Length: 279
Picture 1 (cartoon, helix red, strand yellow):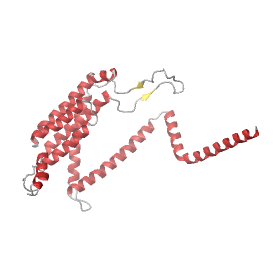
Picture 2 (spheres, rainbow, N blue to C red):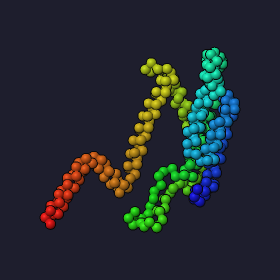
Picture 3 (cartoon, one colour):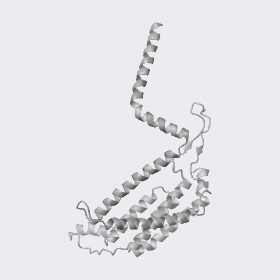
Picture 4 (cartoon, rainbow, N blue to C red):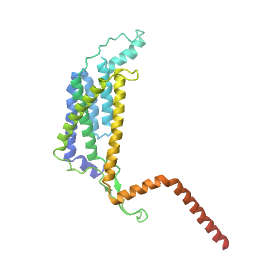
């Protein structure tokens, strides 16, 4: 690791976001215990803690997958060991899948709401932590052109490879926690609204609610993309707008431009051959 990377990981803002994400992880543990996961609640905790300590970018994805599998199985009365016993051991013994009796657990909407808020806070804090340690966008290299550089010249420096330490304000993490709570409340109300709708297309209540939610989310994303694209174009400078228009012009006439370029290249080649033949 480079000295810059070590200095970035030792920064004050990195420690604060790591503590924020660890707090979200620790709050998940009693919630999972109340949902009946017993010792299985340690598994998501280990994944989240290892991803934070190793700065693992894919850690939140595996945390979400593990929580989705464990919570869904536990809601049906299963756990991974019971699933192995029901699906493998009972069948090998020839007893059928009904040897091990399971009981579905009652729904816990409030615990699910708190768990979703903690997961959202952990994922957002984890990726903001990555922005302080790694480059979240492709770094821009600035320096002399390749033709002007010599083999002995150093490579051009990276411009803004990561978020600089000290840019995190005092209100950033409280606002992130408040945004996680507000997002959880909004998601709960939206999901309850879709669940209360009449089933469509002969689907089940859950399938119809999931289909309506996906459709509404896609429509909202398209509207947001159009709105922010319009705002970005309105905030362009003169040079940026000219570059954008030139790019659009090239996309519209690239075939015609390519045909003209091929003819020009052929004319130059013929002219050069004639000159060489005249000599």
